[in-house]
Every structure is written in structure tokens, then in C-alpha cells.
Length: 380
Image 1 (cartoon, one colour):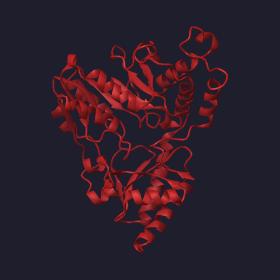
Image 2: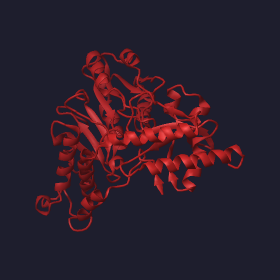
Image 3: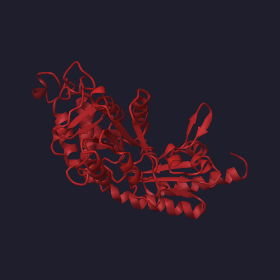
Image 4: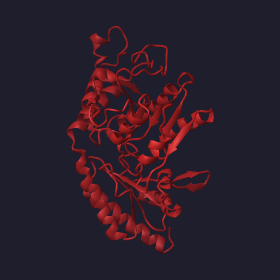
């Protein structure tokens, strides 16, 4: 199998699996027990916090709270920050992941002033529009760091500066699920205005079911779950020690691996694709992107059809369209960018990992050529 859907999830690395095994077999004890420091069950949490603090240049390891992943973290931000005691507006972008856009929509349904900022044709947030939407009563701004479909990197530094200029008391949250471990993040440098940052371990060759939230010092969140006191009293429940052990190793490996090198592989794929399909559209090709991500459309072909045919042949990719009640609907991101409906329906996402190769992407292009030929002959 050729796996090129790494923005959806990644294969846990051998070192990650090895790091988890002792906490599934020998050291299976409860990390909240009074004996945890003796058994060593409390070590994975400390290791994960320290590794993430180093990876993201956070103030200290205590800035991290661990959850089941970014979806939970994103929902927690919206349920905690926007409360009757903190009335005011909320600002999000039009291309947010559903774990941000849907909590924002729920707030809108109960009367919260939720403002949506659009993007340009490359998928970058319109900073002038953002400036216009920010006001003194804005309590929360949530702008993703990297788009899960196009891979476009948002100008986090400039967004943070705008927020501090227009509404200094507002909380700046970024869903950095796709960015952590893939691009440089400096929470004491260019990202110093970020207050809350969500992430998931399984996007960087870590295990599923573990992730968390960076919480800048001095900021408080209402508890997500009460009844045990874990995670500094903010999220009660038995700690996922195997997951944390794997997350710690994944963060360490992310610092070791030069993820930017994957940009060459992405560019090679796009060059091969355009030779084979001169009319292919590379979405957001003119914007800063994740080094591993290419989002493209082939003329006259639905991305869902391509994905299904490729998977039958053992090649796994992602799509930008989704099927709802038997009808295809295009990528929300591409629609927000003003991409024509038919082109948006053809969206196909290729996302590489450290295990991907030039042979993989070349094989993908050859497979697409064969499938396109079948479409032309009416055999699809």
C-alpha cells in the first residue's frame, strides 16, 4: 500500500510504539495513584510536557494540558471562554475545521455575536477584513495555523499583532493540529500573542487518542471535566500514560526530523502531475504551505471517484469533497476561496510523511493517468 493521506493521520513510528509498550505491559499503573512516583507511572506526562515545551518553545512544561486530541481541545476552548460572564463577540475564519466552526455555530444559535472572516483566492485570511471584525468587546479569536486541506499557513504573527492592537483583552486561539511538528513554532517569538493552541499526537507519528492544549501562563479556563483533579484540576479522568509516552517520543522525533525536506517531494509530485495533466489546478500554490501537502483538481473528474479508484489499487489519498445524503458537496475551504463548484468537487489531497518517497508520488501520477484514460473511454 502507498499511503499519502498523512494529514488525516500518520503511522506511529517504531520508536513511538516502543516507548508505549512498557506502559501497556509492565508499568500499567495509575498515574494518579499515590505510588505513581515509585512505580514510574507519572513519568510519561512529565516527559510529554517537557518534549512539547521544547518543540514549541513554550515558557514551561506546566503550560500543557492533555486531552484526547485537538477536537476535544477546540470544543473546550469555546465552551470555556465564551460564557455569560464574558459576553462579547467571537471571531473565526471561514475555513476552520469543523471542531471549531461547529462550536462557533452553536454559540451563534444561543445569541453570541459570531463573526466570520473570509479568505483570499489562495486561502489566506484577509487581514483587513479581520481588522474590521475585531472590536473592544471581542473575547475570542480562533484562526487555524495551517489548513488541513490546502496546507496553507496562516500569518499567525500578523493575526496576533492585530488582536493586541484592536482588542488587547481578547483571547487568541489557534488550532495548530496540522502545524505542530511540521513547521517552526515559537511561542515566545513570532507566536508570542497566541494564548491557546490545540494539537493532536496522531498527526506527527504519535498515537491516536492523545493531544492537548497549550495554555499561556496567567490564563485560566473553566474545567472541562471535574471529579478527579487530574490535569491541574481542569480535566479529570485517568491519565492515558501509554498515549503520553508515545506523544513524548513523537515530539522528540519531530524536533529531530527536518520536515521542510518534504517540500521537495511535494514539488516533485506537482511537477509530474502538471506534465501528465497540463490543465490540473494546484490549489493555493502561490501561498505559504505545509511542506508535505498538495491539494489539486483534475478537470472533469470528481475527487471522490479518483480516491475510490486509487484505493482499490492500493493508493490512499484524501479528498476535498464530502458525500452528504447521497449528494456530493465541495470542500468548504475551496468554496471560501471562490473556486468554481465543479473544480472544487475534483479536489484531491496528497499529504506525505517522512516515510513517503519519490517512487510513491510517481506511482500515484501514473495511476491517475490510467484512471483518467478510463474516464475518457467511459469505463469509470
